[in-house]
Length: 123
Image (cartoon, rainbow, N blue to C red; front, side, top):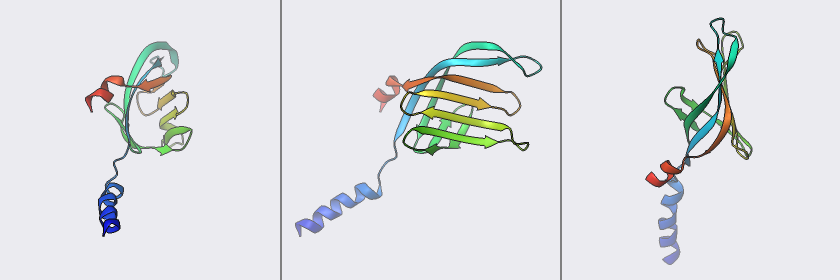
């Protein structure tokens, strides 16, 4: 009887396990593009992203499914001509990040991420 009660109590925690959610603050440099779409320089920038399970949640960049392994979090979408439409790479050990958006208005961000301590206290 005790064993069956223990199994009934533990089973829901396996069935209803919650996925990990992480809020990141990333500081680095964003590339500034000229009118002819060539890089003109860089400026300091900050990105705030959320990784919820295997999904990137971002206000401006949208939601994207991620490929996650022991060392990296990444995703890549190609444009019709084979060029990068959107790419994200985060090194899980160092926090290094690179975001590239090629559609329409090009954007490139390179920096380092850390946990958003303020979001951690809200939960």
